[in-house]
Image (cartoon, rainbow, N blue to C red):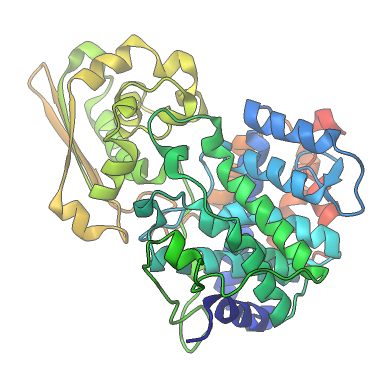
Length: 462
């Protein structure tokens, strides 16, 4: 069997913009707009600010990239980390669900940085994004690393190396080396997403993406890495996966195989994706019932699926969130807030909201159980069903399987643009925002990626 790194490398090198279906190109542009929007919206939050300070404080570099939201540049690997932290902070970037659940758009920051280094055009960026998404999703389909105690960002490091390597125009041998170099250092502990969640929850993927870019740059200059990195004596399969192995039989464009980017979902609310349908179900109940106060609720019963339960329900901390990172990964809290407030938005995850007494009262009368019906639908559908019984005797049930933005219920270009503007607000001058969005929607004709990114500089960064 051909080593998996070589197999992925050959596919990536053969990928060509001219053979991409139009719908794949259009969806890639939606992911660019969505990722930049959530990153700009999180610009002033603490982890992105810390990462940006490091990028701006670093010495000037011969390999610079643009810090999103500014006209400033810094070393590409530090900038990738800063941009990736911003894109992930609100947990509002897109998602792919399979054996492993992850965020393919975590790969966009390193692809953009590589494009600035190589002075690549928009067509090359789209190739890199499609390549990174494909590798991310195919790895997620093949094996669940979280079941071995590893974090899903292991796959982001590998995919980022491929996406950046595609933009750097690596040949098959150098692409293989980029994968080898990224994979040897890729394993990250799943403790990132267990118990009370820290700021690192939103930074781990950015770190993996930075490492993926670094691996691609090393390979670009001729560095080689250990091989076979997957199947070797001390490779990923034996050491990290306990002897388990996997392969990737088909990838996008091979035969009639579709591209995995088309099966990724854009978030409509800023919550961990397995709770997205819970938000829609809760909001349906709130709309039907009218105003609901904490003392009105007799009981809340939730039916969910095993993966969602294990990630965002079972830990005691998910029933008593004390950090923003835990709150947006707490299905019980998210449901309580949606029922009481009739909305879920960024302010739902401020301390004054998740620590409030009213949501705590609702949490005390809530139960969450695993439903076989919901398990049968996952990962294609994320069925959450909520039944609320009020003390006045009324009972309401809301169910959702494919919430807005799910790939089976996709957001339109206008929907993505609306989300972008809601997040960015007035921080970017309206004329620049309009030009920036027009550039994204025609990104295949963009000849200067750095200039395109600087169009979206914040007013206070000009």
